[in-house]
Length: 334
Length: 242
Image 1 (cartoon, rainbow over the protein chains, first blue to last red):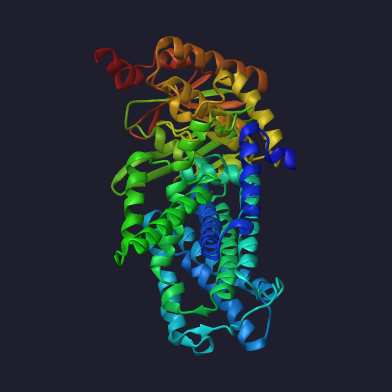
Image 2: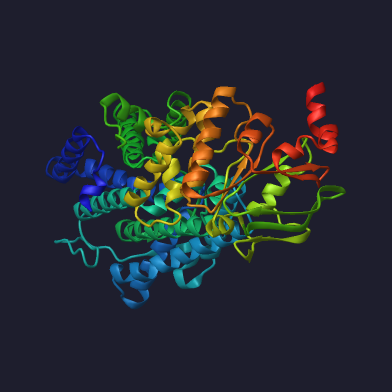
């Protein structure tokens, strides 16, 4: 199994992976509290970017409403915790099916009635917006006034209840990113992965090669939605407050897709690298501006815009394919 | 020989235009059957009906003793009909080998089995040495053969080839003709092809069907069909003038 996953990967790429992983594992020993929160953000976006990439990068289905699955995961787990005292991991077991069902609903509507391309993207936005408005009026989750989880100073880290210090969330999201990376690699090297790429490249030709495109697109949406909902659960227990206007907002959906676009859509390392570049540089920018005493609201958004422009103009395939070529990390075919 | 594919009284209309008009013919198992005719005769429409892109307005299509008209393209392919597109449609960002693996995975669940099969098919189509290249980097003749390879990898009983020789130089045409002949002889696969290149048709086909305005004007052995006055008038003769 492991041999299959690393088949064709150059040794230096494996060594680099190992070094990066070791650095990530050791980071909390050296990082300040501030750097740690930045790293948490980076792995949060790397993980969700990987989930989104399954739909867009592998199966070619553009979702601009992934905040929906984040929000559903966050609200499900948080509500269950607040109302019934159900812990986040049990909550996750409820959140995943709900997010998967939402993804299946969107997928069914779109793929059954041949809603494709930008129209599909608009549908994903629409459903996320419905959810935002709906949750604004849903009394059970405190509507627009927001849902708050009790916060106190924690002496220890309890992984089972997700109550603890940032370092616990850091390792949790790091583990999630690593598992998502391995899982996506396995998917990509499997039958379903080949079928996804075929659909992405040319759906009609894929159908003519015997692929039941409806079925495999549904699988992509459902896996992506389920994976994304986990990030929502972590979000809820990390930030301890949820507002529909925040979690379901379209700007959240856009934020999610920036890392894989900058890093390289359809690549496994793209979402991770993109998250490092965007979040890392944006935080550096904010920090620098603060240090020199300049107050520029919206500087981060402008910076994201510039990054995106630069990548689209200079490296339309994303930063990772370029880096991989430069460092000789491209996969060899047999 | 029994018929592997039979088309019975099939019609297809696009609004006022009758593209295929009450057409009937049968393709014997193991044969190489060519459909020729001038542009707009309804050849590609006929192919699209067999491959499941369109459902016919009337009539039935029987493949391996089962009715297949109106089935979706993926279902038709799973029944054992592989097709190529007139304008080639490889998966551009994938390697040549991965393109063919996609086809091979239809009836194989393990990627390694599919790769082994794909490599076998690529050898047959003279593409083995180019298997690591991206499909988008191939020349047109190579893409045409890749298109055949992908269809062939799905293990079809019937291969539908939509103008695979169009735009090729004579040497390239001869190369594909030789490959298809060997394939038919070695595996017994039935081939139905649409073709304008008469040099290829004459070298390959055991039977020819001539379409004109959506209807058959002649059918039979190649030598007889090309001497048919109606065929010369509507198709071959016209080619000589132009």
